[in-house]
Amino acid sequence: MKMIFRWFGEGDDSVSLEEIRQIPGIKGVVTALSNIPVGEVWPQQKIDQLKAKINAAGLEMEVIESVNIHEDIKLGLASRDKYIENYKLTLKNLAQGGVKVVCYNFMPVFDWLRSDLAEKLADGSNTMSYNETEINKTDPVQLIEEFADGSKGFSLPGWEAERLAELKQIMAQYQEITADDLFDNLKYFLEAILPVCQENDIKMAIHPDDPPWPVYNLPRIMTGKENIRRLLKMVDDPYNGLTLCSGSLGSNPANDVPGLIREFGKRIHFAHVRNLKFTGTGKFHETSHLSSDGSLDLFEIMKAYYEIGFEGYMRPDHGRMIWGEEARPGYGLYDRALGVTYLNGIWEAINKISIV
Ligand code: CS2
Ligand code: MN
Image (cartoon, rainbow, N blue to C red):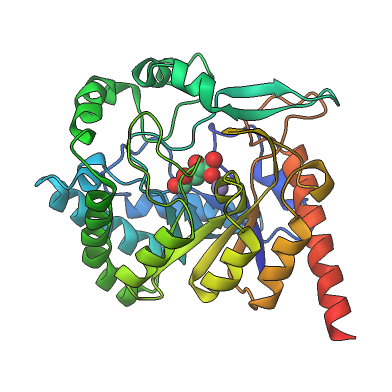
């Protein structure tokens, strides 16, 4: 297991590489080039500059989160081929820069969704929460607009302000798309890029949908065991793998996260580990990583990774905002750093107990 930490890049993250370097056990960052519109090729020079900066801080850059997928690919439009060609070039350039794993998602229009980005907890910290009833009251177009105008302090991934005009049209186009269509479009994409992944030894790791069920009438397919099985069989190759996010999959209580880890084993290239607490049907809030703070058993999750002989990358996922920190929701330094230390502690304990 290689523990890494998400860093959004200079100017896009309140946390510095120097701070990340001081978290015990952190070997590298998972990052991305910001400011490259979705669908365009990531230039080699910019990748190399980013890598040089990260390496100079004593950290590795072997994982990218995310190279986002253009909506035309998800919609299966004729124009997808040009975006797929661009994606292949980006993968080649990234591999050239030493990148081993690319995390991406295949959610229509939206990435993760929350109804509250700063819900107050009893201990005075705040955290992100989800309430299906609240979400259903909001208008998706308005929600994206609110993010894009900068008033929330960061933008929704893949939704640069200049692309807002297309949004209504894209929402309408999705009304024709079923979950099966989305699977077909994902298959088309993966089969097209796979030779590039094999030649350049760069693995794809799809992130599950968050939350893992359809929202705003948009299909979502990376939701649980059956669909993940279908994906892995559909393109049965180790380069078609998973980012197993305990928090995203775990927000549906029907998903048994340790069971998924054991079943999908070597096809997991990247692990996102975090906790959350169910507060009702379609309702949860994120918590610290500690098992007793939430509904997921992080010991069982880490034990499952240990038992499959996990050699991939792992990162703590969202943290709360604590100690007065102000940062991008979910991505402050302190609570995630506490998460790393807790996960490393569990791992060390399992390891030492297993070898006596
Ligand atoms: C992440 C996702 O920040 C987060 O919540 O878990 O946004 C993730 O980066 C993307 O879905 C992966 O493409
Ligand atoms: Mn995640």
